[in-house]
Amino acid sequence: QVQLVESGGGLVQAGGSLRLSCAVSGSIFRIYDMDWYRQAPGKQRELVAGTTRRGSLNYADSVKGRFTISRDNAKNTVYLEMNSLRPEDTAVYYCAAEVETYRVSSAKYWGQGTQVTVSS
Image 1: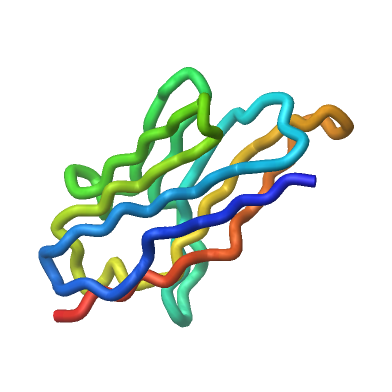
Image 2 (image 1 turned 60 degrees about the vertical axis):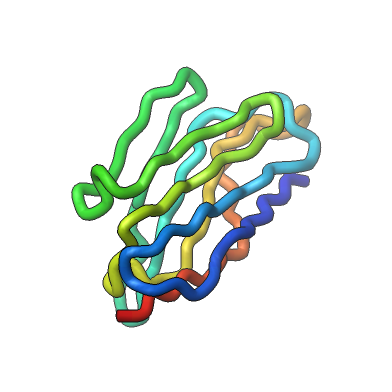
């Protein structure tokens, strides 16, 4: 069993910052990709940022230069530092991780989501 627990969402004014965290726990053998997605009302879920175990990073064009993804492999945790937030960043943010457990070869697991609201 693998659990992902996000924290750090909330309400912030435009131009402000938030830091999201996502801790992965359970019978973990190894974690591969760790990603952040978001889903705004009426829109499809989209990839915001991703990181591989070796440290490669990728970002959606809409957040480049404003958001930074990082991970702490020792803590099985991924972070998303969000700066210069805009109202269009308002969404539910989900973390996802590709996890290999001692019983199951790698599978993608999702967190429950955390709300980020940016007021204008």
